[in-house]
Amino acid sequence: MAMQASTTRRGLLAGGAAAAVAGAALGTARRSAAQRGGGEAVRIGLILPMTGPFASTGRQVEAAVRAYLGANGETFGGRRVELLVRDDTGVAPDITRRLAQELVVRERVRFLAGFGLTPLALAAAPIATEAKVPMVVMAAATSIIVQRSPYILRTSFTLPQATVPIADWAARNGIRNCATLVSDYAPGLDAERAFKERFTAAGGRVPLELRAPLRNPDFAPFLQRVHDAKPEALFIFVPSGEGAAAMKQFAERGLREAGIRLIGTGDLTDDDILNDMGEPAIGVVTSHHYSAAHDSAENRAFLAAYRRVAPDVRPNFMAVGGWDGMHLIAEGLKRAGGGASGDQLLAAMKGLSWTSPRGPITIDANTRDIVQDIYIRRVERRDGQLWNIEFDRIAQVRDPGT
Ligand code: DHB
Image 1 (cartoon, protein in one colour):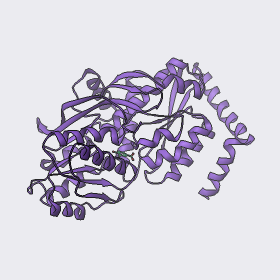
Image 2: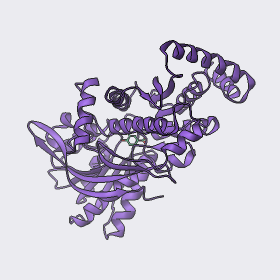
Image 3: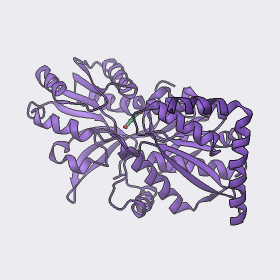
Image 4: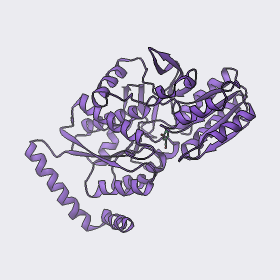
């Protein structure tokens, strides 16, 4: 059934029936827009994991996109924007692909956005290319994503971009051997490779490289092996939401008492769940592009806008990717005009620079990938809460692969 539906729609995208369906949808949109007195609304298809193991990513990104609209209005380039949020459950690329197709063909979205995990972004890429619809990757972070479609732009980060600075930091701070533990899928492999290359080039040694399954991981046996190998440090990458389990096992297996230092990318000390990690997280050093504790006027404005939408959630790095992704779309509409084609919008978005809540960022005109500052942070308790406190900054880091 699902298979049949998706085959039909694939045909629709190219076929004449598509025009009829699209025409009808367009007619409805035009009429309702005319009733409101503005131009036709610009539809944005926001595909996110709203349920399932990675639902925190969906919740963070959606809240941030809504916060952006709450703070900046909903009209850009003379057109009101309309969000169409779709739940892809986070674990099924075929669902993401089908949703992208439906949004493009039936709903005539002018932008695809969201994409919580790498396999999901990769699955939607061919749809963006075929439909010539700009696709804003707000969360997924494997290097190769932007190469999968000329219509992809990214406002999140890449794992190598975040990893190289912590490998350098470790080498500079007297760590001579460091094991790695990553989630066994594309971003984990990106992190593993980037860490090893950089750390060994600086004279370090990686005695153990471990990969834990992405779904339902049990970190205990891996951490036991690290305990037995007794490296000076352990580097961890796990996707947003999984850091608490890894941290708990690190503590329970006695790695800290054994004198093994814990480092990682900031996915590990995710602001969304950092407070729940408690004592074991204190002192952990990570590198990342965003901390909710970042001290700037732009971040304070972001936190205030976010609080109005999700008062009980601390925004994390996924949220800032959503906020900046919505900003990129808004600027594209302002510059190219609300009625512009996908190619015109894409051209207007490439090369833009602005001050994000995370700091200064650029969407590189050639790679369509983000260039941003990466911070070295340490988890500290301040006023009874845990925060990633930034203490060093590496300016304007590109994905090292590009
Ligand atoms: C990806 C997902 C995450 O939750 C994260 O923290 C980093 C990368 C990804 O699948 O690309």
